Structure formats: structure tokens, C-alpha cells
Amino acid sequence: MWAFESVFYQIYPLGFCGAPFENDGVLEHRILKVEEWIPHIRELNANAVYFSPVFESDNHGYNTRDYRKIDVRLGTNEDFARVCESLHKEGIKVVLDGVFNHVGRGFWAFQDVLRNREGSPYKDWFHIHFGGNSNYNDGLWYEGWEGHFDLVKLNLRNEEVISHIFECIKGWVKEFDIDGLRLDVAYCLDKDFVKRLRSMCNDLKPDFFLLGEMLHGDYNQYVNDDMLHSATNYECYKGLHSSFNSMNMFEIVHSLLRQFGPENWTLYKGKHMLSFVDNHDVTRVASILSNEKHLPLIYAMAFAMPGIPCVYYGSEWGAKADKSQGDPALRACYEEPEENELTKYIAALAKAKRSSEALNYGDFKSLVLTNKQCVFERNSENERIMVAVNAEENPYVAHFDARAGRAIDLITGESIDFGGGLDMPPYTAMILKPY
Image (cartoon, rainbow, N blue to C red; front, side, top):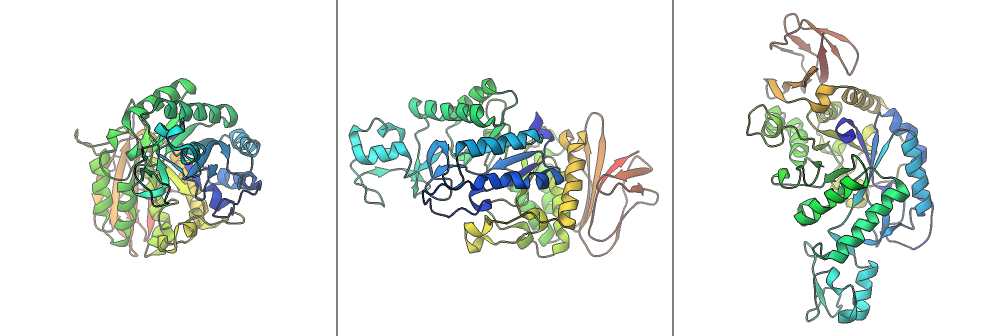
């Protein structure tokens, strides 16, 4: 599948485009700004864009008002169709955020229930008790997502709800030719709904990609042949920055061995999870790492480990923002993309990743592991790659059986000699292809 050989670039459109936080109802064609960034996305060697919510919502995008209409703060459906066409012309796939667990209070069907109560034809679209009351004093109780009453939980066992969602997705493919969906809070979704969604999408478009937001637990419950193709790898997200900050590479390598290691019992062998160092919900990685010299190295790990790497807009040049400042701080508007050594480095990583069978499909085996260094191997049918990371300020010589005398570093293009061990300069990552 195309996604398994791709590098994703995540955009949170409402923030990216500088839209007001609350939906002011004023039409502005802000989404067209994405077109100006396409050369930058190409320069990064990303070939898929994952858009956080673009549809009409109450404010932050995850409280949808209408799945059929692009948010007025971003523009029109025609504007977004133009953006998608421009991306596709450059060979860039488009994945949208599918927020199907809940909607906003402004969702048209919920508004009908508030007006017509028991007389509403949509009363069974939600989990409603007319004898109770809500935090908004509606004179009825309804289930909100995890107690958030601005997020009204949909009844995903209601056939009309399922039909409405599926018709909307078909409309997105017809109107925008989208290539996949990222399912918000996938871990909350009814499993039968997800199975039916996968079946419908299989018939809708070849290789239609389904990614799920998963936090904890066993991702296999949702990532399997009947449900999702992939999930957000939050376990390794934490392991990555924690390993660098505590200078303990055992943590991330332990997680990778647990997930993808050579033993039969490992959890996700042969599967492709989404690898990331930050996103729209968490502190930016440049603000998490205590040593800025680890910034290129954490990206090297994220690109070289098993999975599908995803870069969050702004972080490719080291933008900073802390979750403690509130979500809008994490979703800033940048007038134009910046180019620096980090963006060039990530572009080199993306090029290496996309062109390597072993990085896309290979297994995972640890060769050298200390607190501050790791060397691991990725093997596929036709290729072998070794990845070496030195996270400390001193050089290190790694001794292991490379089964080769020389290798080329896919990041720099330099030739590396294994005679007497692998010389690893301070704060270095290498992606080595033996020859």
C-alpha cells in the first residue's frame, strides 16, 4: 500500500491558516494558503498530507456542525477541491480527519433534537435521556465524549447515522478525491462500525488508507485485516523523547523490540504504525528535548524505525510551543515556511526512507545498545540497512558484526568503513546501506 512507503506532513488547517478560534460565520478563503506551501512540502520529500479537521465546526474542528461543508473560516468546498487537486498534481496524497465518535452542539441534527425533542427524527442519532438535564440546561441529558458536553457522542449503532457518515465519505472521495482517513479517538469507536467502514472504503477506492488515533493498550484490537491499516504509535512517541532526555536508549529500543522484534510474540510485526515526535495535541518536540542537539537524532530514529513517519508543520524547522500554553499555541499560524539545517536533514531522511525497501518493510533487530548509543538493523527481502545513533557529546566506536566492509550513509551520501568498528562522531545518526 502507498501509505507504507510514504512520509506524511500534518497540517492543522484552522491554526495553519490563522482562522479565528470561534466560528464567526465569515467566509474567508484561507485554505488556499496550503497551495503556497506545496513547494516546501515537496522540498521535504513528503508525499502525503494529513489534514486535521476541515469541516464546519463550532470552534476547534473536532466539534463538527456539518460533514458536508468546508468550514466557512477556511473557505468553500470548491477552494478545498482546488487545494486537493494541486496536491495530487504534485504526487501528494490527501488524508482527512474523520471525526465520527462525536459532533459539536451546533451539529444540524442535534440542533433539531434541541428544538423538537421527542418529536425529532434524529433523537436516536445520539444517546439522549429526555428526563434529565445537561450542563447547558437543555432540559435533556445526552452523552458527551469523556464528560465533555460540547462534544455530543454519536450513536454509531444507528443505521441512519452510519448511512449519513458513509454518504459523506463517498462525497469527500467524489469531490476532493481523498486517499484516506485518520479516525479521531479510534479507540472509542464501535468495532462493528469500523469493520463496516473498512469494507465500504475497500469498495470505494483502491488502497484507501485508514489510520486510527490510538493511545494505550493493544493496537491490534483496531489494526487488523478487517479494520484499520495503521494507528498512531504513542508508545514509541513517548519512548523517543524520554530516551533522549534521560539519556537511556534502552527505553525506546525496548519498545521497538516489544513491538517489532524478532521473537514470535512481538506485537506488531509486519504492521506499519504512524511514527511521530509531536502533533497538534502535544508539546512541540523542540520544546520537549532538553538538548537541542538531539533534535536531528530524534527525527532520524522516527524515520528509521518501523512505521510511517509524520512531520507536524512548523516542527521541521524547530518551532517551539508548550502544551501548558493551551492548544492554540500548538497550532500556530506561520506566514511562510522556514528553511534551515533541520529541514534539509529531514528532507534527506525522507528521501532515504521512501527509497528503501528495508526501511519501509524490514524487520527490527538490535545490534548494539548502551545508555547513549544504539545500532539496529532493518532487513527486508532484498535489502539490509543498519541504523546507528550516538546521542552523547563524545565520539564512540561501536563493535558489531556488520557482515560487510563498507557502507554508504543514506543521509549524507558518504562512504563508511567498518574496519576496526564503526566510528560514531558526537551527536550523529547514520542510516547505513552495506556494499
